[in-house]
Amino acid sequence: MTDQQWQTLVNAVNGGSDSPVVGFVVDSPWIPNWFGISILDYFTSDELWFEANLSVQQAFPDCLFLPGFWSEYGMCTEPSAFGVRCVFPSNDFPTPKSDPSMLERLDSLTKPNPREDGLLPFTINRQRLLRDRIRQTGHEIRLAVARGPLNIASFLAGTTEFLLAAKLEPQKAHDFLSLITDFLDDWITYQFECFPSIDGVFLLDDIVGFLGEDDFLSLAFPYFKRLYERFPATVRMFHNDAPCKVSAPHLAAMGVNLFNFGTDLAFNEARELCGDEIALMGNVPPRDVLAQGTPAEISAAVRDQITSAPTLRRTVLSCGGGMPPGVSTQNLNAFLEAAGVKSR
Image (tube, rainbow, N blue to C red; front, side):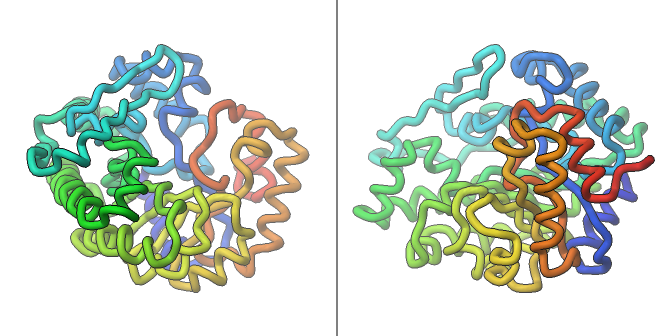
């Protein structure tokens, strides 16, 4: 993100303006195919990764793209450090293969080293190698990014197996989450060390949406709170596009000040649950409207969103979650025009 873009985001998070701001979470599910390359090419060529990210920024200068020049390998990024097998189709999402036996051998698991283990050294080294070129375009690496503890636990041991353990063997689940959170502390710390321009923490975790309130307060809240409090970041962003009615009232106390949420709540409902302290980022339906809708349908959805929001203060107009595959330039421009931010 450029200095101006970062200040626009910080201003929105701090409630300094009620002018329209548009932003999207973008990564490997959308960028490569929009750019005209395969997902595997995007992962394995530093040059193509750089050109694809730069092209997105140049094509839509009125839009914030978060986290911006994100070096990642999909859901395999953090789980790879724990040694799980990762599958990389040529043009589909990479998948870590879960290993339910992990829950039975916690005593033998050791905390991964983000400087050496799995794909993490590759994610950092790509940004290091290209940092000067990124800076020459006016952009900086602004956010330390990681999947959240429950998300990683579910990919490592299996979603069903982890959630069953959470109910039937809660101490085992807590031991697992403690190990993962210790690892995430190291991983985020390493990102801050490598890139002094970072002033934000961005955690993504949809498994939070699978929990009732008691389980959320026990299994999720303390681990996320620890991570958000650990780093003195101006922007503390959380993504959960699974149901968020249970977790939303607790996010401010957890340390979040920017929330990218899904479509299970209307914008005014999310505002009521989250309170006025959190900037909301959402929530036009990503697949059915932004990707598959017509420009007219997108314009109508954006106008409805603006109308239903009590105010545009602490608001980032977006879709309900990350940018989905298949969103065209035409549809994205229709969103920006309806929001009133596209340059003429």
